[in-house]
Length: 187
Image 1 (cartoon, one colour):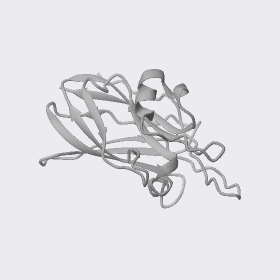
Image 2 (cartoon, helix red, strand yellow):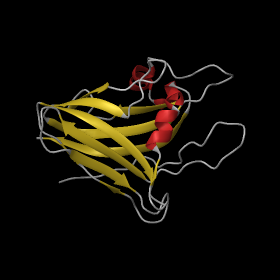
Image 3 (tube, rainbow, N blue to C red):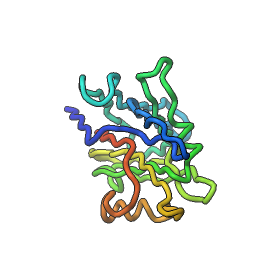
């Protein structure tokens, strides 16, 4: 039996420039798990086609093979635009102020995570990742965090993932642009 749970929903950050622009809306989060060494890609998506409120979102379960290593891409879209607006490139362009975090009961259990992409300062972004799957079940919480400087001092540092693991998101600055919980099964 599969249960799906959404922890919170999204209003993505806008531009931090001198002119205020409306924030981006994230209605879709897509994870593509590509088995290293070949095999079929496993895609899981969160989709809320009418945005926050209204109809409930759909969240695909993540079913992976045990003892397999996956390279995993994360994509963010605004499906209310036609065609859907790709927000992933904006995150990449502003990577010094963004990081994707992976938490939940499957981390360091059914899934072991490592970052594959870095910003210009050598800090993790989280749009490209590696997961190693082991037998088990649990949750994978994907959180896009906006980490703008405070008083011209950067708040994005190398140890943010460890701080979140130890104390949750209250332990770091910034705000969540999107947060989705996926159910993970590794038989």
